[in-house]
Length: 452
Image 1: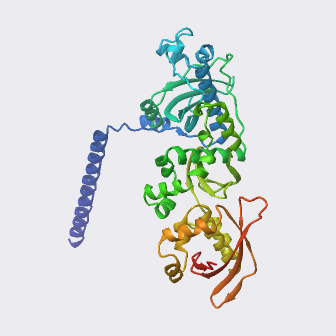
Image 2: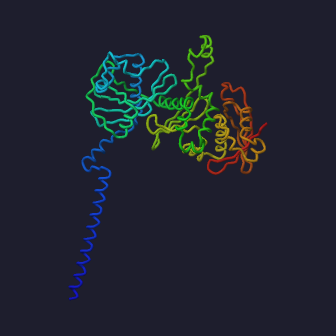
Image 3: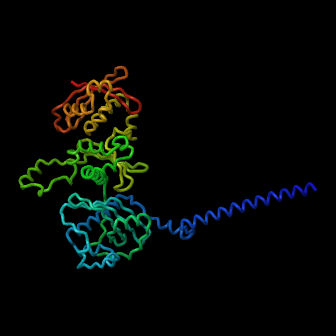
């Protein structure tokens, strides 16, 4: 009898467990159905199809990116010279049909370029390889006498025939496409006289120069855009607002302008040809002096040094997508920190003196001022303006260092340094100063120097 009661109890518990499980399953099923209805979710085959459609990605190959740019520059040239045959052969058949274009009316339906001062720059390139041949979605700017116009294109490239075609599109169409809308496949491109796709080869110097010139252009002509290019950590520490950054650019205006080819004046800017020739004779063009490029885990690092000794450290995630750091001392960069850590104490002192003068050369008087010993600073330069005035009057525009052997006194190092004028090729003039430095934690330091 007891065994029967036990059996009944076990069966009852088992049935309760089954009922609870069924309730949970039904509730989950209702939740799934509700989610599907609310989000218009279509499962299984269509879901997989949606994933397949999301195959539009940023182009990461430099040669491909600049090949597309080069061919689009040819297209812009044909607009400039009004070559109707070339333009007609370059537009896709779909675009021609849609806009009722003929070779006779094409010049009335295309962009106008009336100035000799123009250039096209490709800024971003997506690709879609799900078609018969590669399709690119290009975003660029057209510069005309310093004025920027955003331009967007679909570019079709047939690698078999080495031919290409394009369609100008609107910004909204471009955004819709790169956000996942799929474009219908085009017919095979027929090779013609003007639609050969020219492939470019870029070396490291070409790349370094492109990034260097791109940043310099925006630093001179578009402060907000160049401010947006700054590395996030660097910007928050160095230029927490655009006013401080603008002050930095104002201090460097003459240097930056001398490196910006778009700032070179034209003959029409002068009253006479004689004035223009005099301007050309006095014109000194500066620019990129040194560069190095290194692949990192998540980006390519390009370090550029201009003719004034200023650094530009580009972190590139894809062609023409980059952030920039404008010095080697404001934040601890891994490669410079590694060098510092491997150095002896006396070598660190010299590295820090070089940092101090890098800041002076860079017109970054605030950083140099912040490294002065507090007591020394209060006694000699009560304000940043006082220090800036002294630095401008007592150091060179660009300073180069020669150092002797340091002497250690307690925790301080005393180092006599000869300072040369970096702009004087003969180094015929020099300044001698005695520097006192105390090393701090990490890469920190404080210093003072003889005023003489």
